[in-house]
Image (cartoon, rainbow, N blue to C red; front, side):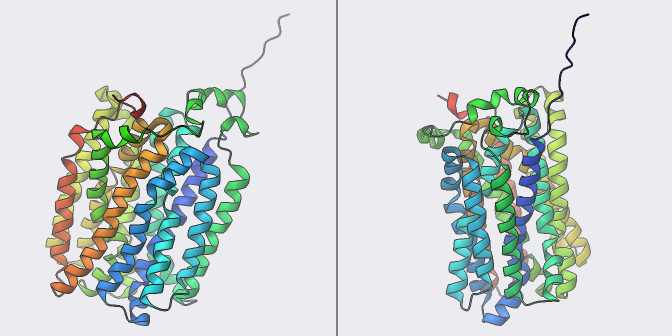
Length: 426
């Protein structure tokens, strides 16, 4: 009688990297969004003008953008395990330190250091996905990641209001900072830079990840010349700047807009301020799971990426313009929520394009794109603060500018080639 051996099914250890990525994304957005909800209280407590508060918002994003490429490159060079652990411990310390600020300059310096710490988070998670997930699962993972990132931000305003009922804004930041320390410890103990080194990954799962082995090795020289000479990479930078410029309004000035322009109470504004991020989460999820089907229908991954980007940019611009015309705060925020949904149709294809183009350099490519997006995050709140101060609170002018940025982003995508890796570019 012949002995028959049944094939052992692949283990599912790789899905734990998605769990770690999702929980980190939620923490990242709680830590960065909570200051927007606390801004009116902080401004009153420390005597800040809108222009000064705008600079404080911008201090985070300036540092975040400047340290994106170094953070992503370090992940490509050293591996995400050590880099992500250090990143999370650093930003958690400065989240907690936010509660110790006593002046404009101390708070600006702390938020700058916080931004430097959080830089590299999403590029390194993208690097993790390129190593630990088969190609067919990568865009779905990006969609799930950004969905929960947005939802983390969406539920932060009511979470902050709830925490403020029991403590001051200073102690609230200390509490939020402590959560990151727990994550960093768990991640460092569980994660391995190479799936082959993880005891829970079986041979069948390793077979699924076999083509990713060439992406694991670190200490490979980065082709910086190809990076800056690549038309597709440069256009990814530009479109992400255009995407993030309006989006940063949602996590910085929106609570103030609802309280001052729409005349809502802090509690009422907290309930509505989360709509763009809540709807955005659904947009990420929708785009991630539609993208694969669209690629099958069209026969081209690049075409599916472009169609989602066109829809997202033009839909966002249209709905933002609609929100300006609506007198009802609730109706205006629903329209702005739909703009957030359209905004985030672009997130999975944009970050998946970084994996497609970057390959083993996915951390650096995604870091460079995120750098430009967060440079927009520096410009937008600072420029918004000055517009509001110089025009005596002309919020609509700020919103029209954001709609124009969405239109500009649409023009980049016809010329982005997501199917030619950087390593094979001429």
